[in-house]
Length: 229
Image (cartoon, rainbow, N blue to C red; front, side, top):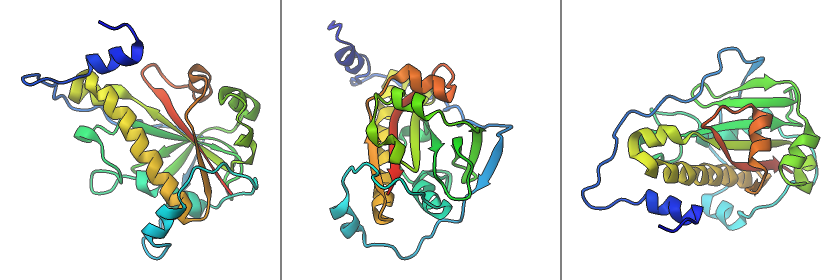
C-alpha cells in the first residue's frame, strides 16, 4: 500500500459494497462549566440584508485592512449559521455528528473584553476561556500572517473526528474536514453580506495553535478565519 499519508488516508477511508459502519452515537459537543465570562449575543436578524445572488457575486477572500472594531450584533449574525436550531445547525453534518468546535480570538469586538472565547452553539453565547490574547504567539502560529493585526476577531474552527468516527468509522475523518469547509463558507457569505472582510488561513503550525487554545488530545485545528473591515 502506498505510504504517502494523504493517499493512505483516502485508501483507508474508502467504502466498498458490503462494508458496514459502526453506527454508534456521536459524542456530545463541548461544554465549558466555568468560563471566565459568558457573553449573550444579540438575537440575529432574519429579515432584510442584501439579496443572496448579489452577495455571492461579491464573495472573495479578503484580509482585513482597516483594523477597526466590529459590533456584537455583527458577530451574532456571523455566528448565526453555526448555531443550533431545530436539533441541527445551519450546515450539513453527516450522521448529525457535528464534529466542529469554534473559538474566537477577540482583539476589537465592541463591549467585549479581549481574549479567547468558545462559541456555545446551543445557547448562542461567547464563553471567555482566557483574558489574554498573545498576538505575537498567534502571529508565529499563523506563520507571520501580516493581516492578523488588522483582524477585529479571528475564528478558529477545530475538528473532533471521534464524533464522526463513532458513526462512520475512519471515513468520519473525511466528513469532519468537509464540515469545516461548509461552516467556513457560510460565515464568509454572512461576512460579505455585512460588508466585512473574511480571510481563511489554512496554513499554520498545528501544535502551536493547539497549545494556544489548550486543546485536548483528539481535537485538531482545521481553519483560522480572519474577520474585520
